Length: 83
Image 1 (cartoon, rainbow, N blue to C red):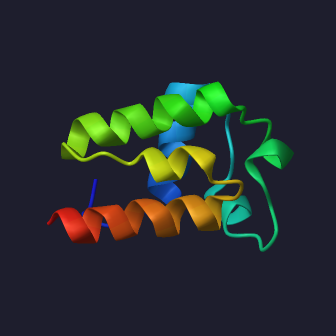
Image 2: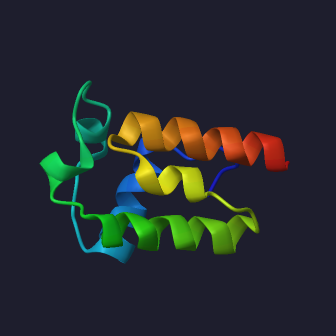
């Protein structure tokens, strides 16, 4: 995984950790929420936990993200600050 989390990376993590298959292109759709894709808070928490373990950083702000754009922005900001 690159230093910056992409929509492709997020789609893979959502499949692995939340059991939800989403086309990365759909994750880039403006206004789309995790709820629209069937991702609940526990699924998102599992993704955040995986990212925290991989990068050794706290990313609790990402747990409350409502959309993939918000999630990616929050995570990538954490990754930039942590590097």
